Length: 140
Figure 1 (cartoon, rainbow, N blue to C red):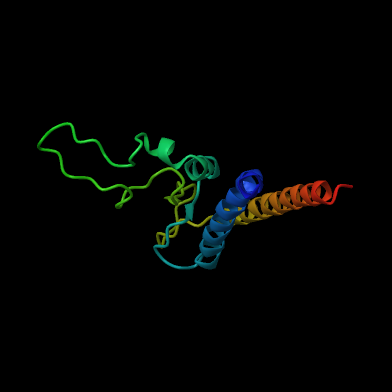
Figure 2: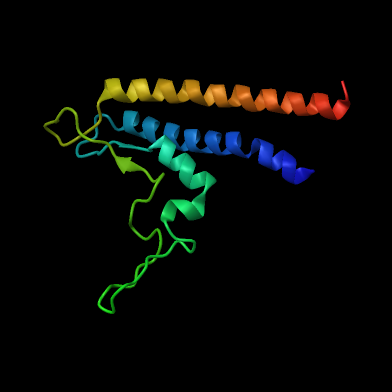
Protein backbone atom coordinates (compact mmCIF):
# COMPACT_ATOMS: atom_id res chain seq x y z
CA UNK A 1 0.00 0.00 0.00
CA UNK A 2 2.75 2.44 0.95
CA UNK A 3 4.71 1.45 -2.18
CA UNK A 4 1.72 2.35 -4.37
CA UNK A 5 1.33 5.72 -2.66
CA UNK A 6 5.04 6.39 -3.03
CA UNK A 7 5.00 5.41 -6.71
CA UNK A 8 1.98 7.62 -7.37
CA UNK A 9 3.65 10.68 -5.88
CA UNK A 10 7.23 9.95 -6.98
CA UNK A 11 7.11 11.80 -10.30
CA UNK A 12 5.79 15.07 -8.87
CA UNK A 13 8.09 14.80 -5.85
CA UNK A 14 11.08 14.47 -8.18
CA UNK A 15 9.82 17.32 -10.38
CA UNK A 16 9.50 19.59 -7.34
CA UNK A 17 13.03 18.73 -6.19
CA UNK A 18 14.54 19.44 -9.64
CA UNK A 19 12.51 22.68 -9.97
CA UNK A 20 13.74 23.75 -6.53
CA UNK A 21 17.37 23.12 -7.50
CA UNK A 22 16.89 25.08 -10.72
CA UNK A 23 15.21 27.94 -8.85
CA UNK A 24 18.19 28.15 -6.49
CA UNK A 25 20.61 28.31 -9.43
CA UNK A 26 18.58 31.00 -11.17
CA UNK A 27 18.36 33.03 -7.94
CA UNK A 28 22.12 32.70 -7.55
CA UNK A 29 22.60 33.95 -11.12
CA UNK A 30 20.40 36.98 -10.42
CA UNK A 31 22.15 37.69 -7.12
CA UNK A 32 25.54 37.64 -8.85
CA UNK A 33 24.55 39.77 -11.84
CA UNK A 34 27.15 42.39 -10.89
CA UNK A 35 29.91 40.03 -9.77
CA UNK A 36 32.91 40.18 -12.11
CA UNK A 37 33.86 36.87 -13.78
CA UNK A 38 30.68 35.15 -12.53
CA UNK A 39 29.48 32.46 -14.95
CA UNK A 40 25.72 31.88 -15.12
CA UNK A 41 24.62 28.27 -14.64
CA UNK A 42 21.40 26.40 -15.29
CA UNK A 43 19.97 22.88 -15.27
CA UNK A 44 18.57 21.11 -18.32
CA UNK A 45 15.25 20.15 -16.72
CA UNK A 46 14.47 17.30 -19.12
CA UNK A 47 17.88 15.67 -18.62
CA UNK A 48 17.69 16.20 -14.86
CA UNK A 49 14.26 14.54 -14.67
CA UNK A 50 15.42 11.59 -16.76
CA UNK A 51 18.51 11.19 -14.58
CA UNK A 52 16.42 11.42 -11.41
CA UNK A 53 13.73 9.00 -12.58
CA UNK A 54 16.10 6.45 -14.19
CA UNK A 55 19.53 6.89 -12.59
CA UNK A 56 21.09 3.69 -14.05
CA UNK A 57 19.99 4.31 -17.65
CA UNK A 58 21.21 7.92 -17.71
CA UNK A 59 24.85 6.86 -17.23
CA UNK A 60 24.79 4.26 -19.99
CA UNK A 61 25.87 1.41 -17.74
CA UNK A 62 24.17 -0.43 -14.95
CA UNK A 63 26.99 0.30 -12.47
CA UNK A 64 27.44 3.97 -13.31
CA UNK A 65 31.19 3.56 -13.83
CA UNK A 66 33.35 4.15 -16.86
CA UNK A 67 34.28 1.23 -19.04
CA UNK A 68 38.04 0.69 -19.41
CA UNK A 69 38.83 -0.77 -22.86
CA UNK A 70 42.63 -0.45 -22.82
CA UNK A 71 45.26 -0.90 -20.11
CA UNK A 72 46.54 2.63 -20.79
CA UNK A 73 43.22 4.24 -19.86
CA UNK A 74 42.95 6.07 -16.57
CA UNK A 75 40.73 4.62 -13.87
CA UNK A 76 37.55 6.69 -13.88
CA UNK A 77 35.18 7.16 -11.01
CA UNK A 78 31.55 8.03 -11.67
CA UNK A 79 30.50 11.62 -11.00
CA UNK A 80 34.04 12.81 -10.24
CA UNK A 81 34.33 16.17 -11.93
CA UNK A 82 32.33 15.32 -15.05
CA UNK A 83 29.00 16.91 -15.73
CA UNK A 84 26.36 14.26 -16.17
CA UNK A 85 22.74 14.56 -17.21
CA UNK A 86 20.94 16.87 -14.83
CA UNK A 87 24.08 18.48 -13.41
CA UNK A 88 24.32 22.28 -13.52
CA UNK A 89 25.95 23.52 -16.70
CA UNK A 90 27.33 26.89 -17.64
CA UNK A 91 24.94 28.90 -19.78
CA UNK A 92 26.01 29.88 -23.29
CA UNK A 93 26.93 33.52 -23.53
CA UNK A 94 24.47 35.60 -25.55
CA UNK A 95 25.96 38.99 -24.79
CA UNK A 96 29.57 39.50 -23.82
CA UNK A 97 30.35 41.61 -20.76
CA UNK A 98 33.50 43.64 -20.15
CA UNK A 99 34.01 42.17 -16.67
CA UNK A 100 33.51 38.53 -17.80
CA UNK A 101 30.09 38.14 -16.17
CA UNK A 102 27.75 35.97 -18.28
CA UNK A 103 24.46 36.77 -16.51
CA UNK A 104 21.77 38.15 -18.84
CA UNK A 105 19.23 39.66 -16.45
CA UNK A 106 16.31 39.51 -18.90
CA UNK A 107 16.89 35.83 -19.60
CA UNK A 108 17.41 35.07 -15.90
CA UNK A 109 14.22 36.86 -14.85
CA UNK A 110 12.19 35.09 -17.54
CA UNK A 111 13.62 31.69 -16.61
CA UNK A 112 13.05 32.40 -12.89
CA UNK A 113 9.38 33.33 -13.41
CA UNK A 114 8.79 30.41 -15.82
CA UNK A 115 10.34 27.95 -13.38
CA UNK A 116 8.29 29.41 -10.52
CA UNK A 117 5.05 29.00 -12.46
CA UNK A 118 5.91 25.40 -13.32
CA UNK A 119 6.80 24.75 -9.67
CA UNK A 120 3.37 26.03 -8.63
CA UNK A 121 1.73 23.84 -11.30
CA UNK A 122 3.52 20.78 -9.91
CA UNK A 123 2.35 21.70 -6.42
CA UNK A 124 -1.23 22.02 -7.67
CA UNK A 125 -1.05 18.63 -9.38
CA UNK A 126 0.39 16.83 -6.37
CA UNK A 127 -2.23 18.46 -4.13
CA UNK A 128 -4.96 17.22 -6.48
CA UNK A 129 -3.51 13.71 -6.40
CA UNK A 130 -3.46 13.71 -2.61
CA UNK A 131 -7.07 14.93 -2.49
CA UNK A 132 -8.13 12.12 -4.83
CA UNK A 133 -6.36 9.56 -2.65
CA UNK A 134 -8.00 10.93 0.49
CA UNK A 135 -11.38 10.76 -1.21
CA UNK A 136 -10.74 7.14 -2.21
CA UNK A 137 -9.54 6.22 1.29
CA UNK A 138 -12.56 7.85 2.93
CA UNK A 139 -14.86 6.05 0.47
CA UNK A 140 -16.77 9.09 -0.73
